Image (tube, rainbow, N blue to C red; front, side, top):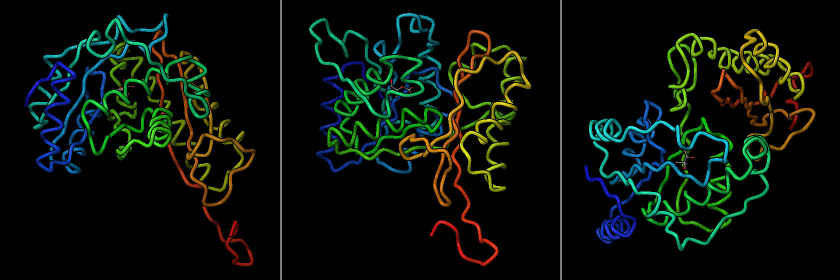
Length: 296
Ligand code: PAF
């Protein structure tokens, strides 16, 4: 495995690999890797000849009062983990390499970037889109893999790819969870053991809502209410948002249609740690009394 710290060097290597006919996958990360990231890399290995994991804590996606400085970093540990699973390259640039003093271009996204995380963290997705665009250009990847845990981010990246006609495939990999249900995240390290266990209610809430949908609940407010009632069993959790919407574009409607794919998204604070999670499900297509399929 090679560690590349310089964007021009990474670009040169990628160009040479492409000239040799190699298919490249990129797994963008901010480091402090966990099993969720490693699953993305393993999946990337199935899809491409060469896998580049990028490690870069992107200052442009953190707000002024957010945890950029405290964001966990441990390059040696990340390096050993990626080496142990046979990743080919780590792209590990300095901030000054990605954003030199002369840097002048920003991205301003609207639409799906403006709700939820976009509202709670103004400018966040502009920063994400910008760095992801740069990482795509630097690595020249054919395919990129992102975790479903950051569901809204995956929609933002798909939008970016469409809007800029980027020649790269975007693959979304399912959420990897701790044995007790908490979605894996680098920020989980801020939680105490008790907080982690208590936070598993987030997964329980999503599961309860999924069960309600399977039993026929299609009303958005009722699905949200199942989630809220469950979350409130743990008073230490401060709810930021609970949002159920069409998975395709986060559009809301009073009642979802049979066959529609929906996503239930949650953001909460546990102490000083903000946790996000989500789950997708399909509104069942049920047979009514006359055996007609509803919604068709
Ligand atoms: O999901 C993340 O870790 C980051 O938002 C990403 C995609 C690496 C961009 O900095």
